[in-house]
Image (cartoon, rainbow, N blue to C red; front, side):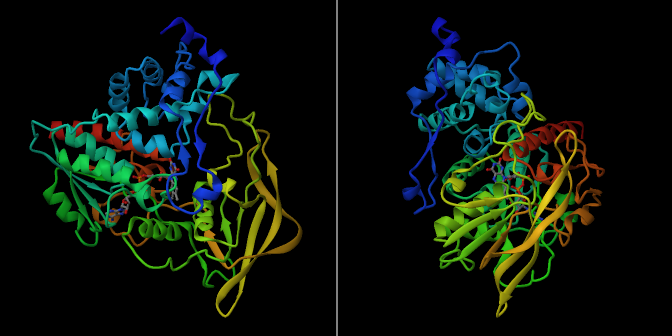
Length: 476
Ligand SMILES: Cc1cc2nc3c(=O)[nH]c(=O)nc-3n(C[C@H](O)[C@H](O)[C@H](O)COP(=O)(O)OP(=O)(O)OC[C@H]3O[C@@H](n4cnc5c(N)ncnc54)[C@H](O)[C@@H]3O)c2cc1C
């Protein structure tokens, strides 16, 4: 590390990404983020303090990316070294560098008193430049183990497990219910956050390396789990948690009220050309109400705006988080604080402490939502405990209501857990952190094991479970 670099965190200000102008970006579904120029990022990488204990690596990043070493390599212009370091722990940095909330940056030591290093953008530069410069090569598997693995679900967890098991020499087949692989990367996260060409590029690589994809196959229905047990030496279940939480209040049966994922998946299919025609629930000219203040809700906001909504309101039952890191989540923890996405900046009214009581409509279609304001009783640590209603009920006009209130686990109608004899816990597959379930040879990874979370955690889970599967197969 050069002498000038040691002080860079004091002398150089953080320069993160920008966004395309709002007027331009709301007219298309292209990625909104504009990464800093490579020269800027090299200087930004010099801001890394190379601190004694890299919390970003050990505490922040679930993949344990070697962040200080990557930063040093980027700062020194050693792209090939940066790429080798990144690829040694991360299967798909091209996904995380676009959609990760950057847990690493929240635990960056520089962030204690100054602004954290722009770790996610440095990751994005490393992987994008590595692809552009031909450093990402097909890793041919020269020695096969003679063992086979069925991975059920082609989301980030299943893809990570498939990648690693294939590199260990096992013959991997990924079964996916949807028409194309990617899971929520493809059918949940909008294109304006993650261009689907980035997924295609990775799937082609995995195929070239020997991973087989069987898409449009619903395991448990199109193919029984008995068949999987007979044909494969191990099974990895990475099916996600797509049962959406519903809001069973009067009027729920009205037309124009639907789960966020149905709305978002259809738009992604239209953008990719998988489907054609009009969006059946288009927000065009409508007053949209998004119920749920999280990331999925924010994606509904951005999608509705691009479809030409008349207005977009997002309501949340929880209290408004503080503008800065809450004292209850001190560094290096992931901070509880208000997050404003690029979609929110495009024009949306956000309200908190609101409970939905009923939907009302005319001729079978929703027209308004009846709400009340609520007040939370907080624990001494600031955790919301229970709420009471306050003030007069009020109405919000809405002719499209998108329910973005999280997920409840495995859809009840899915037969595969019972066919495999798996035990469930909180409507998820019961398994240890190593992914080992109660049924020998069957493993679980990602959201279906731990509950709805993040892409980076799904990849880390898939990678960890792959090691358990490999150990199991080597003993077999
Ligand atoms: C709208 C939305 C936006 C999000 N945005 C972000 C974000 O910006 N950043 C972030 O980090 N995280 C985000 N997340 C969360 C993230 O996408 C998930 O945590 C992650 O995709 C989980 O990965 P997974 O592989 O466990 O499951 P999934 O991605 O859900 O993949 C599971 C796959 O299994 C398939 N499957 C299910 N059952 C069967 C069966 N019986 N047979 C065959 N295949 C089956 C499904 O079709 C699916 O393709 C978002 C989630 C949503 C819903």
